[in-house]
Length: 289
Image 1 (cartoon, helix red, strand yellow):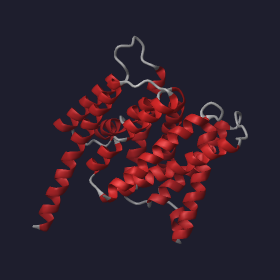
Image 2: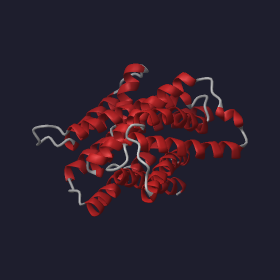
Image 3: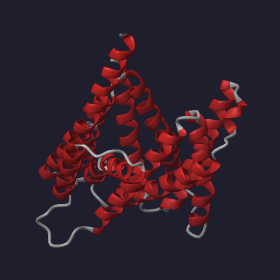
Image 4: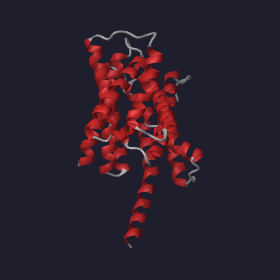
């Protein structure tokens, strides 16, 4: 029940962030939005660290890995925000679900994780889902979809870096350095197109900054209370929810094949996760014996 509550928070956060990003896309540049998001993140995370009373969380011995993670996440977020402004919301979320697929491929190549039949099945199902989402009936694939796929690839690189950092770094340290690294990048890219936001745009920017943190915090909290397979399944509910928002709020067309494609990717992700769960249970049994 606890994981379900945390995932409701995550679903709400990501959907609100998508709506806020869509509302800002016409008047505020993506770079400026990401700069403001990072500044808000620095303020919130710093406040949490001061409240925790552990100032060592502001320090790290792995700055190069933090920089790599920050850059990859910035590129991924930039592509996500650009896609939000030009693609149907449901399509953006569906293509974002390819992140575990790219993570699996990257881990197999660069981390030299041994390939298995189940991993191969997960990859095949994942690419089948991508094929359906990209609409095989069209002569030309929408370039905006490719932007989101590239964003998902960089999100997967971010995940690989996060996995390496999690061995030594506190989550608040990771978030702090992410925001600290991304803020000057967003400022540099958005300085020429910087505009003074009005009161409504300030509210949307604040929502982007807050929900980007609460979304990931809720996901992490859910992971701590339930198996990854449960979290992944619940996270899939983002798609029908954002589809409803797009259809009702923005009169976007409903595409059944998009849901089918995302469903195939979900099955692929679950296939990849379940063996890990079984291995974990086996390891626990051996330790108990």
